[in-house]
Amino acid sequence: MLDTLETSPVRSAFCDDDDFLELIEMFVDGIEEKKQILSQEVNPEHLDQIKTLAHQLKGAGAGYGFDELSQLAAKLEEACKSQDRIEIAQQKELLLHHLNRIVV
Image (tube, rainbow, N blue to C red; front, side):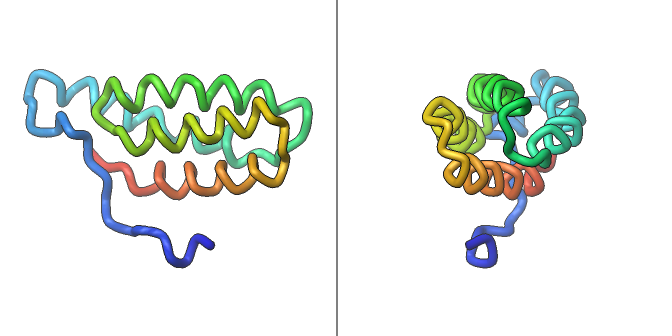
């Protein structure tokens, strides 16, 4: 599944806004911690944490100019609400792949 995904870098829609650049840099700097949380195995004790993180990324993604990130996070949040472990695992992988492509 992941071998056919896009590999080009992802930049914020606001990356040309010098006033916003520092905030984007701070957001991108925090991505590594979020990837660690998403890399955890899908099990009941981590489900709430993953759902909360997906919700946060959904809002932050749009706010920082990363619309696709927001859309992928929304899909993961929905998967968490349905508690479909296979769907959660798939959406986590897609989101992680996207997070790995984000640059300032």
